[in-house]
Length: 177
Ligand SMILES: Cc1cc2nc3c(=O)[nH]c(=O)nc-3n(C[C@H](O)[C@H](O)[C@H](O)COP(=O)(O)O)c2cc1C
Image (cartoon, rainbow, N blue to C red):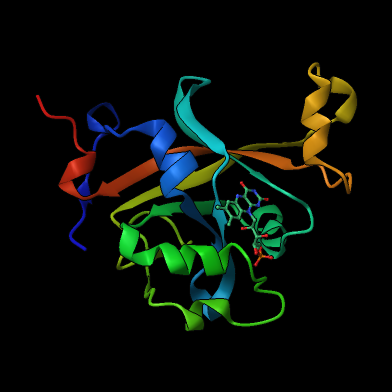
């Protein structure tokens, strides 16, 4: 998939579709020595915080990917066309702790542009991020108690903010002037 750099203020997408319907692949770690893992994500945000463009993701502590999010400084978020939905479903169902799950998909791991965390040749969008903040959700801070229904096992997400260092995307992610 051909991607070119998209400046922050040129980036354009249907944000609710991107997270909630298209989904993204969160990858954390470094390409060197195969020290990375990935998982599908559908919850998160993109915006501006502390005067920096950011991506925010939430990762349950039980995910193998969380070990990499804790240990390494950078992560990528990648989006794919419909053709790769079965791969994202698989990567969101099986844990990399138990198998080399990427080998069961059509995805090709490639180096990213600005960070050591890898991305994918087939992605139509890659957002490269540097971790800048993390914390744990505290159940006592949930004002709406229905949020607790998401945590029958009390595995409260860890929340991570990453500063966006680079966006590479197909032309449909570029604002039309
Ligand atoms: C559509 C979809 C969205 C998901 N979103 C998240 C998410 O935002 N946060 C999370 O912790 N897990 C999410 N998951 C679950 C993980 O992707 C899944 O548990 C995965 O197998 C974890 O892999 P790992 O153990 O190799 O890290 C989602 C799964 C799917 C299918």
